Length: 199
Image 1 (cartoon, one colour):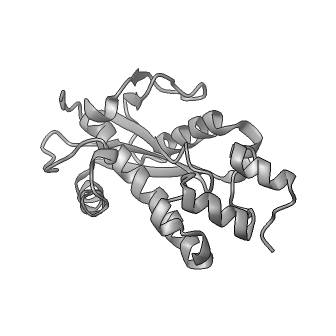
Image 2 (cartoon, helix red, strand yellow):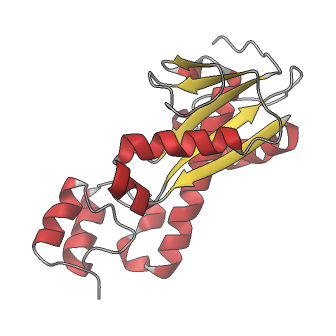
């Protein structure tokens, strides 16, 4: 891993592009050169417990951090890709310190990002600030799913986190589509066409 630190650079990553429900999240993180975050890597390679522990440490140690989201209405209006770009732009704008450059995980840079930026494929495995951002985005996204699970326990959001698992699809079939579901995602769209809405 290339975990070189440039204290004026921010790492940006997203979480929640694939699920059928809820907002898409993005985080931006500027790390100091002397960060101490054992086990820091792509959030998908960590257990939930490890992610939660690292998220607390990141917030304590980061020079600056910010989490933002684009909700289901924006996903419906703009599509998931552009909603994700909007969330990333908001996360960078929310940093209390303006970075001199932004590293973004993936192969796209938000069009309205008014800072020098570089897209880094698999950046969450290469650049520490992006890894940190991936963890903050993922834990924020999971927190939304736990809150949704409290309101609608029959859907199992705490377990599948909104992804299109067999259990989630079965719950959708049985209980209908919630307002928080992404209307343009194929399984949800198909059920809406059948008139299967949550009552």
